[in-house]
Length: 261
Ligand SMILES: NC(=O)c1ccc[n+]([C@@H]2O[C@H](COP(=O)([O-])OP(=O)(O)OC[C@H]3O[C@@H](n4cnc5c(N)ncnc54)[C@H](O)[C@@H]3O)[C@@H](O)[C@H]2O)c1
Image (cartoon, rainbow, N blue to C red; front, side, top):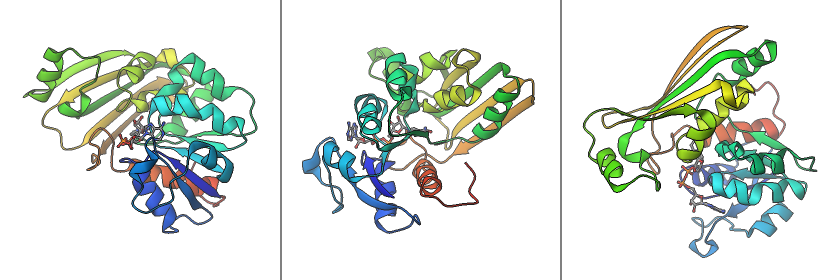
């Protein structure tokens, strides 16, 4: 399976290098798609989007919600499979409709920074949830967003105590924190219900781990998952484990058997 990696940042770069080193049986790197192709990719092949769609069997999106919105439908429309990490983009109905429409390529969702999605999905199928909440706590400075006024941005950069930044429907929260709350969209997809999922984002100046606490109460039972991830050194808004979640998903798509999905 030839894989084009979209984006060469905290997630895309280690994924592309691992593929190039042959670390995923059944998969090889077709190339990397960069917003600015002239910046290169540590000597790895850089492809234009059209070339990538032509040469790859799978496009692995590691570039952000906007990039997914811009290029996802083109990849699946051309018959390429698409692996998504920036799934908060699917909170936008137009993006969702474009990617869910019948197409020759298939869309696959990567679990990314969290787990327990398989059990939530099974539970949703059994009878759904009365209530689901995901509480994400991250290093305060990594949560500064372009829509924040200067006062709030400064409060985050200079914070000395935890601050609850947003609490609301997963759809709203994942769009407000596009680099930090894709997990809220992942939980909503697993629960099959955007409206049942409340997302909370807490900025904490003293955290050494990014935490996600998922609490769900439904017909099948009561669940609480607590995930504490080491932040990525390259991009503290992402967790270090995410490239490995992408590689795991690629390995499963490349046909490896006996693998959790
Ligand atoms: N599902 C999850 O659990 C999860 C966790 C962390 C991050 N994410 C998502 O993954 C995205 C990438 O994370 P990261 O840490 O690698 O971010 P990053 O900022 O380090 O890297 C993103 C790279 O993508 C590039 N890019 C943006 N638009 C592009 C386009 N149209 N074509 C090609 N390249 C493009 C950027 O220039 C940048 O180099 C985040 O924005 C977030 O949406 C999801």
